[in-house]
Image 1 (cartoon, rainbow, N blue to C red):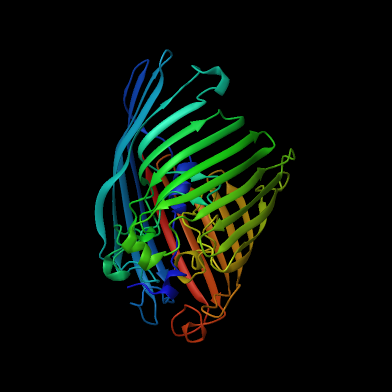
Image 2 (tube, one colour):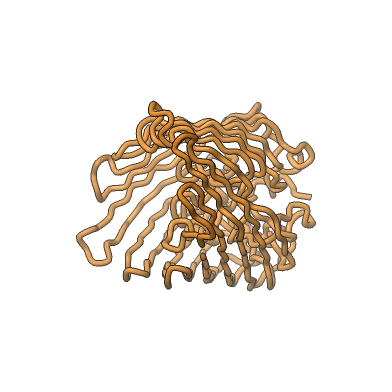
Amino acid sequence: MITKAKRASLPYRSASLTLLLALSPLSHALPLYADDETTIDAKLAAAFGAYYSRENYAQSGTLSEGSSNWQESMFQYGLDIKHANKDFGTTYGALNWVSTGTYGDGDSAGWSDGTERTTKIEDAYIGWRSTDLVPAFGTDGIDFSFGRQTVVIGDGFLMSGDALNFGNGIDDGHLNRGGAYYLTARKDFDRTAILRLGGKQGWRSDLMWLKSDNPAQAKPELAVGTLEHVAEQGTVGLTYIKVLDTDKALAEQLYPERKGMKQYSIRAQGNAGVPNLFLSSEYAWEHTDTRQENAWYMEAGWTFSELPMKPVVNYRYSRFSEGYDPMFYGNGRALGTWFQGEVASNYAGPFNTNTQVHHVGIKAAASPTVNVGALLYDFSSLNSSVQNLGAREADLYAEWTINQHFMLMPLVGLYKPEHSTESGGTQLGNSNTNLYAQVILGVNF
């Protein structure tokens, strides 16, 4: 049974590795069939991760002071199909499976215990795009799809898929989704109906009905609407989310106030017409029958395009109120957005609630195939009466595109909490600096 105190520290995970695969040169498919109207592509992707943490964390209640050493794997395989006809638009769809596993000790928070193995359908959807059949909406200005698929809003501050992948280590395995907690290959909403209106520029909107089958999220049913204006200088958007229903038994245990909850947000992102500038911000309001919460951030970055390696430096301040429910946030834009700190966001907490975070990110191109970066964080709890998760973290990483099929991402992190479990923190037995290391190999054909 998960206690009320434990509810406040549940994480919401979306894979940084999945993001890297999606954005990298690895992202392509193996053609099986093609003619003037129809293409059928095979999708085959895999990821393997090895992890070490010198310290453990009191999230599941199953671990003791010490270290953890574990591994994860995921394989995704299936078909992507597209049929384009100038008189009837484009029909598209996908059907694929994902196999996941966790090995060794399980992760350092105890979400998994190393025994997780499963194979399940991941993508299973069909859709239609209007091409140029309705000029008033622009090219592909009408896009309707339904089935099992992922959804990302903005840069993932509110939603980046249904990607929390607990294992057998928590709640006697009742929340188990099959392992690979960090890699999170399983990120689709179980049932969706999505209508997208508008092209790639100007005004556009999304109207969505989403149903989760994730027990760790209490299987919510959602109504979602967005309105955006997209221009060369940037995008401004509004988002509305309402939780229509939840699984009653799971919600009583995990999120008793989630049913009926409403979220509103306003966001903006772009360069305001200055080529080397990056600006991003979002403010979210959250309402339930008994409380009102909020979360917001402001971020600015600059690319030093005239310097060797073209370094990029970003600063971000984010704040999440004491009872804020972050629901489906994830890495919609880059590593560290919105999983802030590889140790903090995955194992130690805070998990984007009851906290304020100062973040500095630095990234540079060491070569045409290698990027290197550093992610620095300072965490402060807003209300430390239940848990005090003040900490600092520094993560150093590299992204190496070996060739068109393989990517390697090593990372080393140092996490220094202000408190151990004995004084309100989550690190078991001490407040020493934790050494964390991981290496992830991504494969795509």
